[in-house]
Image (cartoon, rainbow, N blue to C red; front, side, top):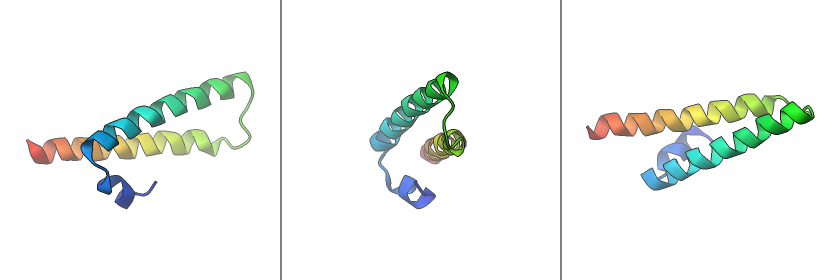
Length: 65
């Protein structure tokens, strides 16, 4: 998901997407602990996507205040 796509999301969609990505990341980390994931870049990409989503959420909070 690119930054332009993130900016187009509504506030509710953004919050839902953050929750969805966090649960997906948790599952990915647990699966990696049990049996190694072939592509470990998935862990890094997941973490970075969540950071991008949270950054956009915080940016919106600051502009609305």
